Image (cartoon, rainbow, N blue to C red; front, top):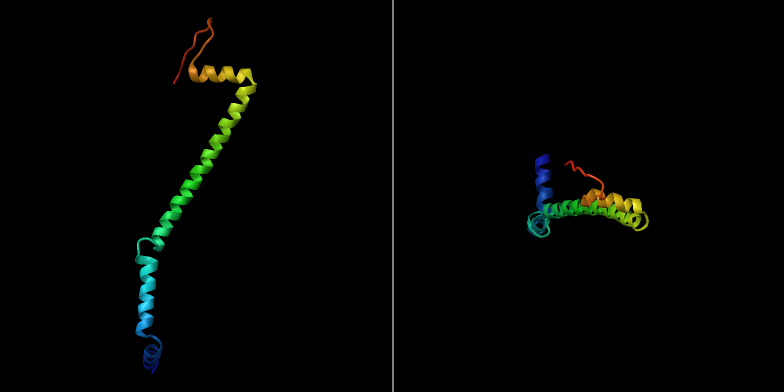
Length: 99
């Protein structure tokens, strides 16, 4: 009895245009390459990764801005940076570089 009622309900409400609309919606949402759900998820992952990279670069930018500000005012910092990065020395010093 249940199978017969289910068959009658399906015959009444499930029509060819409805099947066409459902198939078209599935095609647009999942199979069409430009707007598919999978492609949008991949793009969102790329966006999230790039936003994390931007945040890391902002942190590095802040570090270098602080270093630049301290180099403008503090002579000891200038000497430290010149000695570390450019291996400069005073005339009466010997410098040994370990890497």
